[in-house]
Image (cartoon, rainbow, N blue to C red; front, side, top):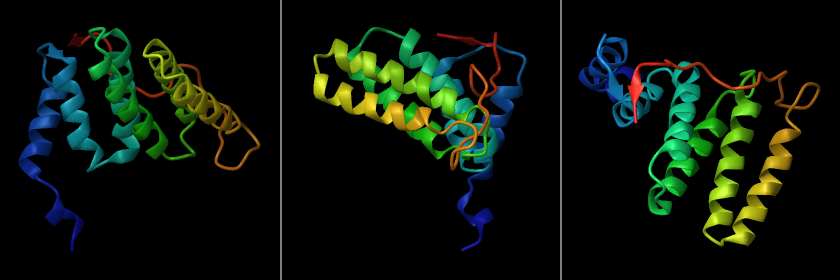
Length: 149
């Protein structure tokens, strides 16, 4: 099947219009738009999706039922990023740290320890290691100043 047949062009257009518009959008709208656009251009939008999910997962309402799944989705998005992306490792580490802290807060110590081990593996993806890159603090690009929580 052709890639173009799998894309809902109306949803893609609405997502791009929302992100490029001059109005303020909330983090939910931004995340939904990035979810749509990662299907069309993952190299560009996976870092943005991961960053927006991280921001919502750490600054949104203190609700474990919401935070942990959001941080898990952020980690999955960061893991799907191209390993050649310089901001991948730092972003993934930041997300995993937030996820580990949330697991500790929920009393899920064994899972938090497993995330710590995952962090150690991700930290090894630096310069000179397979799949690693130089990394830049702060991670992927975003559209600061346009969203509300």
